[in-house]
Length: 434
Ligand code: F0G
Image (tube, rainbow, N blue to C red; front, side):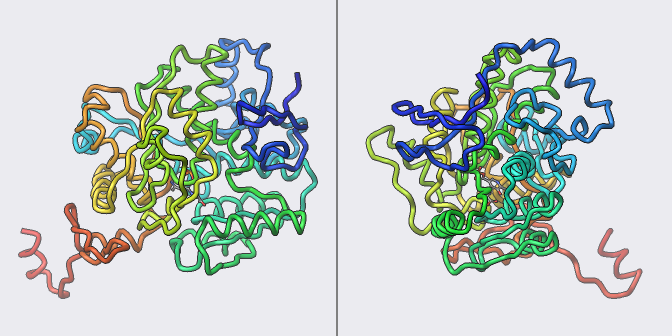
């Protein structure tokens, strides 16, 4: 069986050619996923090959995504690959953050070490490769900032024209600056993320532009490499929990698929539990899962959070995310603006740092350990999705007591660290340092 696309809806499971330009099932409208036969995989040999590639200077081996290409063999010709040496992101310990989160230890998988500073690069290298394989000239996305930064870079590096749509005034300058610098045609629309996604889908269809949002199944294939690399770095010891922030819910879908497939071929001997953390003002998936089937999924019309990366009210991948949370016996939590801000400062104090959405992980862990859902001694990996420099304005405001939640409430600088204005006077400064 070759690789193909399949409908994710268990009642449908329609099959499509891997080269069909589709984002939803034409039979039922469901989400699509890439499928392969992994029968021929020898897991021990593969682990060895992947280790050897780390010492190999070939671009595909140096990529922390394509090194693991046997787990997403959708491409027939590797010359379509555009790589900026994505992946290769570290696992870092943070004792102070562990204590804050109510844990004996914590490990951060820091996706902010990627070429454009977020986990989107892991998926975008695959999406851009498929775009080139299909002979596309233009690619488009709507974004809360990171997808657009990443798409702009990979499209430009691969000779494609990037078209970006962002909610006007609602993404950080760091991310907008990247899109401009990487040469994307950038449209700031007077609408929110969910509305713009609908708009971009119409335009993609009308103009024959390839859509590179996480609804694109090849993005999901690339993002699987985050958990594959994580397991390789851990010598294939499965953690108890993997915790990540949730917005459009593509990443948790990718993690679940990657872990299930690794389990299927014997690369890991058990599944970790997945925990998705949302911001309180932007938590439609939390609400839905908390209702335990008592109410249908309902989009939030006016999502609000200062963690703009996850300011999404109508996440497209919720059916996949639900499946992955349930099949991994995972959980969904939500956290307040204050909790995100404080957790972020604590991650900063570890010398690690991350953008606001990423800090929802530690804030969520703190709540989940307090509730007894995660044990104090559990082996926990929290995924930091974006680099600390993505949103410096947020950081400055927090530390100088100027940060306000979207409803106007002041965020307290619990771990504030204000800059100190000093005269040009060594005596006075000596006095201040003490
Ligand atoms: N963290 C960061 C830093 C993000 O940029 C995003 C999503 C998420 C978490 C949530 O991941 O959508 O897979 O659940 N950012 C998208 C964007 C929506 O446009 O950059 P998700």
